[in-house]
Image (cartoon, rainbow, N blue to C red):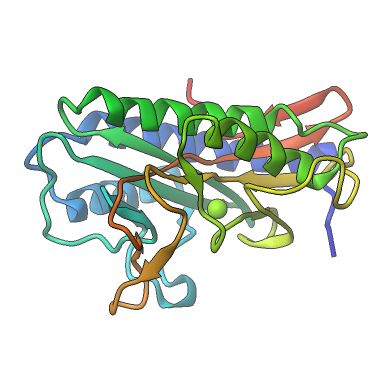
Length: 249
Ligand code: MG
């Protein structure tokens, strides 16, 4: 069942989203060669305490961190550890908080130091793919218009869109209906309506779309070990179109 949110409820989600984007901004400043993925996680958790919010992922289905940290061929759900980032890596940071019972969820992939041109292109194209999907979030469109716009853009560069993980409705729960695939046929799926709030999150592989989950039970990697990028925003559908609740200032 899809829960639509009132303007007052969206105001609370806006507050959750602002904290998420602020902390992701800070993490982006900390990302550099030599930093461990656990240090990033600890910063995120500390800042949740400062803002009086709850880290949404900590303990979610038993996830051990506050932050998902996915390096290079890791697609999503990487567990923070003593692993240190190296020059030329890319690192995906997926982060969510609960503010007064309302969730915000966003992800960005950062370059660590200098990366090759084709690597920065993968990041740029994934982010642009997300924006293309967001642009479809208006009343009158249908759910798969979002994924269609993402897929169409991404595949134009020869990249592939991950199928096993999808975006989702979000509100008083981290994952609500509907599921929001990053692929699909234009003009299909449920009608998009004012008050729906969706987390849209394309995961884009430089190689093939297939993924595997490592023996830690969490970390998803590309089956062909190609690089993977991930960007996500929490987006409210308003009468006038999309409002991104997790925009960076
Ligand atoms: Mg999400």
